[in-house]
Image 1 (cartoon, helix red, strand yellow):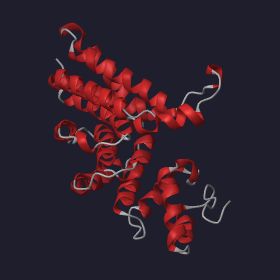
Image 2: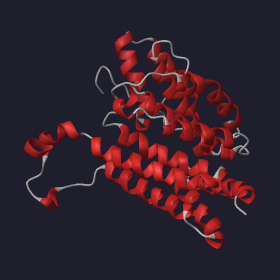
Image 3: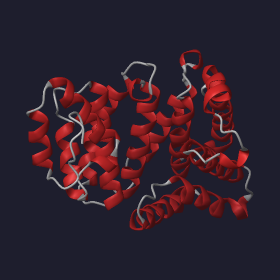
Length: 285
């Protein structure tokens, strides 16, 4: 391992935090960011991962963005584990939401309010589903308002990444507000179209001259393509739900839930689908 990258995968959270505290500030910052943004760098034990991320939410060396992303990453871990701690963590995220919404737009995936907002809402919507869906209607309205208010003239090529999260968020929000499906489907489609339009547009010449393989068969599938394909599946499902007749409406929204809820672990998806079904019992008749 390099001087700025230690192997923490077999360490406890306390070991990791103690090691960070002993590092010079620049190294501390670089290593802590790896632990937040690269889950493969964290302790293998999921409980230790969560404790580490909890500690990083309070790390004074980190930027405000980094600490908020540590909070989001901790929520991801709890959602994956269907943890009884999810309710308390959701409460923390609700308290932090005003701070999230007040962050500035910037250039860079981890320096930009747009991506932060929809990353946070994605985790919050899933945690809310898992803990009784008590805040779903409020979070849905915030999600719709945030999508409608995006300042397109200040968006960057990273909007593509953010819209992939946005579509998942809107899909879950529509379980609570199914009558908004037409408007939200159209808005999501427009945003995805625009995100593709501006995605790395200024860098195309680098690929055309230096990075392009010589043969088509040498191409590989990028992770971004997988995100795009999955996002389009979700968008198609939302559009189908928006246009479904009365008989097809419930299964159409169930299909939206199936694609949009968190599903990193089978137990997580099963729990969230069951929770989504209970929401639809109230909202889709």
